Each structure stands twice: as C-alpha cells, then as structure tokens.
Image (cartoon, rainbow, N blue to C red; front, side, top):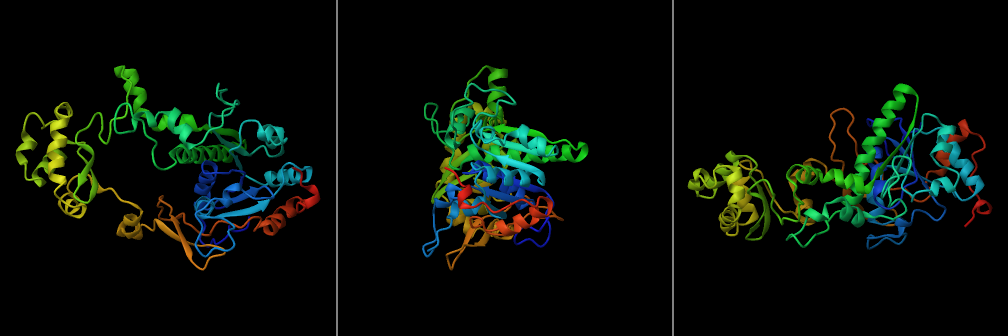
Length: 411
C-alpha cells in the first residue's frame, strides 16, 4: 500500500485500507478518525463530487472553491477518486477496490447499496475478510428492523429521539438542541470503534462481518443515566438547566464577564470552594456538608456560589479555583484560539487550502499516543485528485480497472 498523502511517520492504523462512500458529517467524521491514525482512506465520490464540497464557509480569497471549511475539517488525510456507481463500469471498478480493501464504510439510506448491486452480501463474496460498516438514522434491518427504518435522519433528529434534548434545556418544558452535531459525531465515533473491533476479529479469524450503528441508538447510549433513572427510580428525567440532578454544586455560574463551570462531586471540593469564597462555615454547615443535603438545599447553595462568582471575572475565578476544585471558564472560539493548553496540545492544526493564499485552521487529534501519534498529515483532497495513484495500485492487482469515462456515466 502506498503511504497516504503527507505521511512520513506511520500511524497505528498504517496498512489498513478503507473505502469511504460517506457524505455529510457522521460518516466522514468516522472515517476521518481512522485516517487520523494512519489508515489509508480512499474517498469514493460521484463524478460531480460529494455535495458537501459546496458548503462553506470559504476563505475570502478562495477563487477555486473546490471545498469549504466543513469539507476540509472532516475529510483531511483522505484520498479521492471519482466513480459513477450508477454505471456498470463504475460498479466494476468499485468491486476491484473492494477486493483489496479491509473496510468499506457508507451512510446511505437503507437499501441504496443493495439497489446498486453493491450490498454487503455481494461485497463479502468478493472479499470474505471485508468489514462492511454503515451508519444510518435507525440502523440496518440486518441487525434489527426498526419501524423507522425508512425515515431519513440528521443530527437534530437523533438528538431529539435519542434522549439528549429531553434532558437538556433551561426548564423542564423547554428541551434544547446541543450545539455541536453530537447526533452525528457520537455515532461516528462509536462506529469507528466497532470497525476496529471487527478488523481485530478479521485479523484473528480471516472472517469479515457487517457492522452498523443507528444514530438513535448511539445517542440513547450517550444518555445512559436516563435508562437507570427510569428503571430504578421510576422517574422521567427532564431538562434541568445548567445543574446536575444528583450533584450540587455542579454546573454553570455567572461571572462578571461571562460564565464559568464549577463542580463539587466530592464533599472535600465543596469545603475547598467555601474556603476560597471566604465562607468556610458553609463547608461544615449540616445543611450543606454532604452532597445529598446540598441537593435538597440546592437553591440556597446555588445562591451562595452565584453571589460570589458574579463579583469576579473569569480570570479572577480561575486564579482562585484553578487546581483547587474542578473549574473551567466557558470559552468561545476566540478564547480557545488564545488558550495555551490548546497550543501545547496541538489541538488547532493549520492546513493548506487550494485556491487561497491563507492556511485554514481545523480541530486537531485529541487522542495522544507516545509511539504512533495520529495527526493531520494532509488537507482534504480535490475531487478525483488521487485517482491515478489509486488506479495504479489496484491495476497491479486488477488490470482492468479503467478510468470512468463520460460515456460510462448515467444519471
């Protein structure tokens, strides 16, 4: 296998070949995680390209507009080849790619790949070691036929049905969408884990398998406490604002110039907080000394902490509480770009952007490893940018792999 673009030191997944058919956020985020760790991810796009290439934001001086920041962020470290899977030639070429791959990942609606003649059973016959992974709103009938199997789903749908909105918001009757697309990225992360588990099994046994995840299921798993709360206590959890139903204080507090988070999951943290506030007597007061008592007297506890935090800036609160109790300022993007933690952990990575004289900045790789550190090795690919290299590699194994011609393309 050739080294993925921009690579020098191999990652932990070097040698793993992944055929990526995914679009939007969830699927590309999953394959991005694999690519960040060194997998050779070949993004198979339709002749017109992944439609998210047209989504901004764009650099102000970008005259090419081959892709925007959205596409750049989740398609870094990948190679691109354009194949028309609606044509016989495109399907034949795709099967030749599959024959030499370890993993295929797709996030089409149920039945799309089967109607193309490229469903799991067909691909497994071509490559018995293949791990076929898919991500859908409500899973695949092969692993459990949901009554919603034909419903399209996006992040906001998964957040709503999986439970996270039902426990997020300022008041019990005001559910709230979580800001980032966790309905996409959480299922994507879980699918990446599933893929690697299946690859491990294939390495041991020589047998691939079908792996899928429902966005609904992943968000339900993320909201694990609502299951045991309902089962054990018979309650139906609702939005609880910026606090925690079982811990106090544990949430957001207004500062003089914004907001901060303070958490006291252990009683010793509460005593330390009270000392820092200049109210050590609250730490031993029998109404507040133990967490369960503080939960009962939640309003009084929140009032006391808020009276202190609102008179101080985020920086002043950080100086008083940092390293003493669990604490953090509520950061916006500008704060994050200026934070020395982000710099030393390399969590913002510069990438070249075709068509622009500027380099873009995208989120880095949070997983840290001492021997095989994953990293952003290359920008997102131009459409069909690596076709010649990919064809050369697979032609050695399958000589009839030919470049898709305009005559082969069908609507």
